[in-house]
Image 1: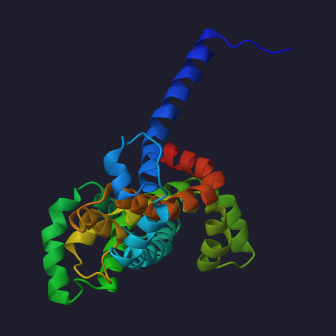
Image 2: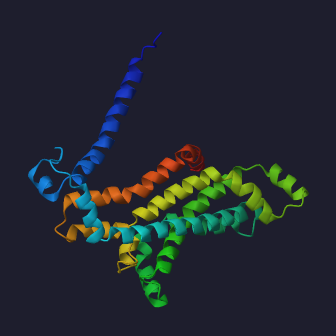
Image 3: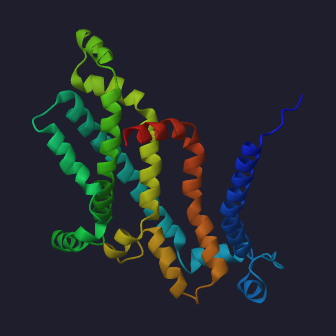
Length: 278
């Protein structure tokens, strides 16, 4: 026997369907534009289906004219390396602050976490001058350093909160068995922190991938600049063709979509952990 929906549930489902349609419409419009040729896009409404298949030509243009694949590899390198380093350093720092309890541990946490409080524009000029003086401007090392430093405060906040909730009895049993502090961190704490690690990896890689500000200010050459800077400059090269730009948008969205799909089963558990810490 089918169960009838109550009026309140019907309203909720209707609202969810409308929200889904609102979210899907921009994606559908981007797909339609990417499949059109520039001439087809200029002669028809944006919501009309393409009369000629232009996706292959658009892909060829974004690779040959805009060199998006070079920027794609640079952004992939920055997001993976910087996120990996942030996970290592922030988890070690959080474990030290919570379990080893150095002097002024809470003050140290506040100093590191303050990096999330102030707007990036406050230290953009000093950072630019420092990079120029140290020879880090327009280098891969400089981009890795700045991205790693920027994502460590939030990562530390998440790990610190998670390690605080872990019961000490497991660690005390490990200490009785002769396990060192390093062994507890590697064999007990980090394996249990898989869900928050997945959330940190997802959030931080996505943020680095989508960064435009630091990529534009701290780099100038094609070999160093991340992909969002290349996407921003596409409007000024070749007349700003909308079908080519939409093809570039779809191309640059591939890593984040794959990341969300591959980590979705850990995302809810990890996100609940993050939300409970706020």
